[in-house]
Image (cartoon, rainbow, N blue to C red):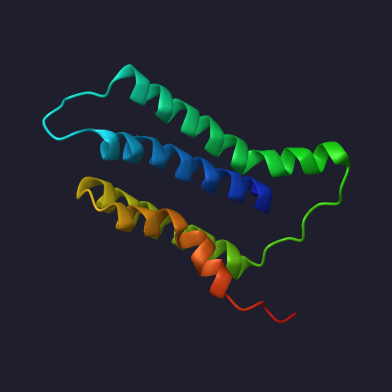
Amino acid sequence: MKLSQSTIIHILLAVVILASIPLLAMLLLKPGHSSLTPATWSAIFLTTIALILAGFLPSILRRRRGLPAMAPLSPSDVRISIITVVIGCGLSYYGAVTRQLWLMTIGIMLGPIVFAFRRPQKQ
């Protein structure tokens, strides 16, 4: 079975969203406490729903409006996306465990940072 690029991107989004849930819980857990309050769990749930909508809503709206499909990604862009997700999840996890919010933020923002400085590929 050959996966399409949109399927790969949705899988990467799912990995990032699923990884962000325990990281957010670890970051919000106060030292000395064994569990989070119901209000904190509600905030995590709402944040997760917002991440899911932010990740999948653009492609759903594009299909509903009948707009043409987005230009396909090059194989090098897909490889860089996968590498970025793996490294970003690792940085985010380490930042949450060590309670270094700046490191967790860099891990989360690594994808946009990488693609902001990536030069367009010549055809």
